[in-house]
Image (cartoon, rainbow, N blue to C red; front, side):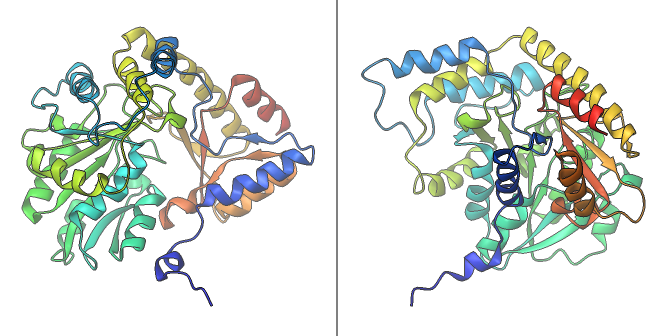
Length: 380
């Protein structure tokens, strides 16, 4: 009898993979479901980005295997982007590795730096993929609590009291998903100091830094961060290229070299047309970000109205492309979400899928056009 690996039994199918099947069945049955659960941009990339892709695709000599580390022009484009947007000037193109989406980077980084049994600090609430990847690799997740009372920042004094002797890595994600907590320079400095003190790798997952932020932030704005840190970035949200799967990891050369050892054995590089499209996206001017954020700001204001009609609490002091809303005491996240889907054909993400501290919360995406948001408001 053919059996499955133990690894398969350590994780479940991704929540959204399961739930979207249900949403699709409801839609096929005639239900006009409004999907506010997924952070997949509904707006298109800039025309110059699409033109770069199609122009490359129409050339006959551009369809072969590409460099495992991405073409030099793309690496330089990421370096230039960091200088223009974050003021980070101490990178070379050997210290950036393009990725087929930053999600794969979570796996590659973990495989490059962790041995089986090593422990990793993981945010609660946080992106579920951190946990699932670590479980598949046989690593221990040590969850550090984030809560509203501490502005969704880690309590480093509390962490200092724990046994961290087996901890090799710490995942952070600011601007934070799902809560929208801001990327704060003071917090970043404290985290860099913490990583140095405990000789651990600090990895900032940074895909939301250009969406409704007061000022784009990077962990590398902190002096000395390159000694202990990596940062993932992505064009999924920044340039409406989620389906293109383009991201990057940045860090000192020896860290990047270790990740290349893993990645080069897993894939054979990114299609040249996508790389050229990414270069065009990284060179977009301020008008692109102003227009994109004006649209998201208008949607967010409408989402706030919807949330208020539902009787939920929220903070207007948040960044990124989600609204994180508190349910009334005693109401479970999935019960609320399932009831809303059944009775109003509106789907949003239950907070508990992001961790125990997400119970009693829901996450609403801004990747829904204004007419759909208005329809959702009218249904309540």
